[in-house]
Image 1 (spheres, helix red, strand yellow):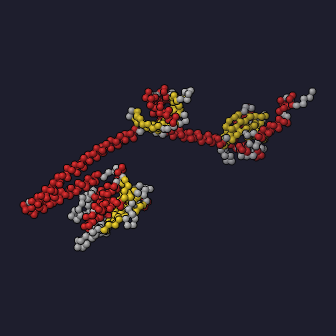
Image 2 (spheres, rainbow, N blue to C red):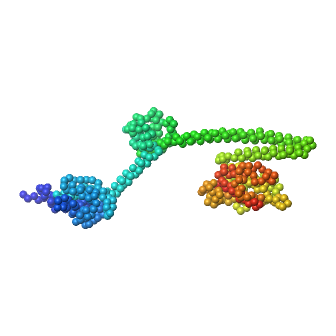
Image 3 (cartoon, rainbow, N blue to C red):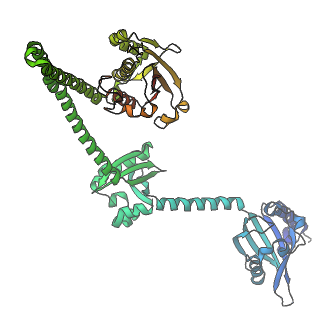
Length: 527
């Protein structure tokens, strides 16, 4: 009976049937893997010296960037000259000689083929033939290598940082509740910090190695960080060593960073001690200011009063010389009284930011001019305020800035010129303001002020006696005078007060003058 189908055929007959061959060829062409078959080429001593490529499926073009027709009929070493150097020829030779299949990841690159990696398997099909199946994995391999390099870089950074860093995974019970933690990573600094306990911390759970206090205080913090994602920052000490600990969530666990702040702590303690000493000194100065304000002024008032009584009642007894000496004594006492008041004003200037408020500069200048009514009338002074631009509102300590502008206006009135007959020339004073950026500040003061900050440039210009520009810095020092007391009264503290107030307001002042041609003081205050 003749069979009507292949059901009764032998396995060899089925494998060699046209249908099977056609199916195999279709699978060969449609394979997602690259497949080539090669036959060994031997020399006279029967050593395999090369391979001839006989077939190549379409996917070889994707893996090798070469179409099959450029591969078929070519020698392997012609297309891949580094195959001997990289051990590829020896690999295929071993497959042919031993019949044992191989599977590995193979690297290849030459002047024509860019750096590439292949997942490769090779199997002998006939006595002299080898079938190579491969897949180009260059993209994934590069990602893998990049990740490895990044991991190595991260490990290097972690091991050489001065911060002790460790990671701890949460251990949960069957209900999902965190019941413990286990260390899974630690850098060198952590291991050094842990000392003899390092091995135990890395191999045992938190509750197995921690103290009672750590279990009571640290464990709830770690749980809170994992459950809420909120980091925890804690400062603590181990003996004389002070550490700052940051605990942050990482996956289902925490990363703990400890940095030694012992030096910073000691500096902070020194600063606190210095501040305490400064406070004691300030308290002493305030006590001195009170004494100077009351106890020292009272004897001076008595000296002046009794001097006046002596001069009035005993003029004839004292005589001309005695009266002159008494007058000098009273004058000296009055100067000392003014000096004490000026020193008190200078010492009271402070940088209390809570006293800074916005106020009208125009109103402030008008108040000052009201107080200076007598010297203005005596000198017939003419004062112009904000003729070009209205004066701005300022933010600062109004009493301090009042003292500043009053001192400058008083100087402008005091240091007026006289004509050839000694008669006073009426002072002419202009008060003006303009807003400027830090880039427009004069070079002489730019370094003193903040960059990227707008400023009010407030000028007080007069037509007085002026001074030589070389003294522009000296005049702001305490007790510095350019003229004798006989010419102009004062203690030499007024401009020092101006300078100190400016510094407390993070501003600057510049004086521009020429002897006999007047002076312009420009105050720069943050806008």
